[in-house]
Image (cartoon, rainbow, N blue to C red; front, side):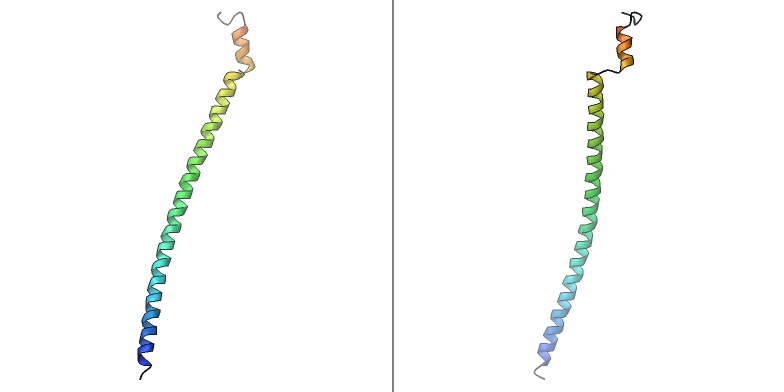
Length: 81
């Protein structure tokens, strides 16, 4: 009968370990879900920033070098000048 306290203590330790593991896996699952949501949000915003910067580059390029038809309108005698 002297081994009974050891068995009870081992069972309590095993039960405590199972409870800790279940809670840890729950926290990890929530963290993974939140992490993927943040990653998707950051990726979407980065895509929007890239699109805006590309649009700005195109607009600046058009201001520096106008299209040939715009140059023809400005330099023609019938352009209203």
